Length: 194
Image (cartoon, rainbow, N blue to C red; front, side, top):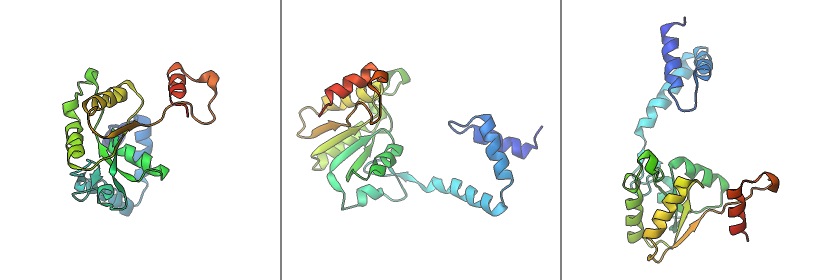
């Protein structure tokens, strides 16, 4: 039996996604051995995230009305990269190759999970495309059935729009072995060949 405050902490930590009870217990015991000053800093950081809101333009996380990418006049405002969620932006930014702006859809179309287009930020994307001089929309969605369905839905609705719609390339990764590639990867690699 553990003291109740420690048990409560383990239960709270294990409620976080991807963290089981054993890992939660390790983290709780680690925190138990930290100075009070460190714990206060952690508590302030946790409660401080409640000041974060979504960008009124692209739905990325921000503390202001517009996020850092929408405010940056050095970024190409005529290229929008549509992503599933805000975490995908960090992955794209890490490459240092993209200099446009973003639009966070807030998920992917998934009828089995009862996620329909009206539950995503697709209507807001179309509104942006009408108001802003956009020349390219990059669909940077996961290569899954849901990602493909979302891309297809958006492409169909924008087929008459004078906007270039592109997708991220797919196929074999560097260092991979053809022998172990699945059929879908091989098909995408052949279709996306340069």
